[in-house]
Image (cartoon, rainbow, N blue to C red; front, top):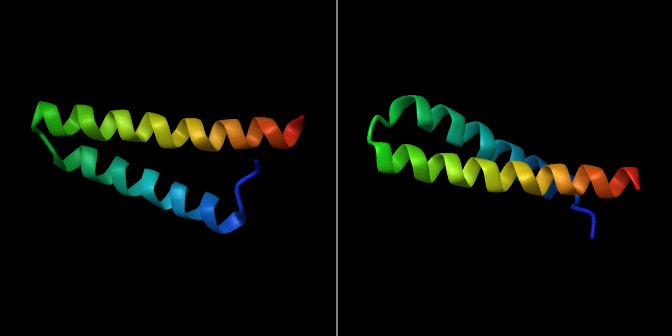
Amino acid sequence: MALSAEVRKSVSMQIEALKKRMRIDSNDLDYETHLRLLRELSGILERDAAQKKS
């Protein structure tokens, strides 16, 4: 199922917010949590892009 433009934009904005937050958070646990979420959200966008190419 393809993501709508609104959902893609929202996910992209969340990714950018996490990237900014990762620069601020020095706590290892927070950083790892943000990194995991960043990878999950990036994976969602990548899968959506791959489905559109198919």
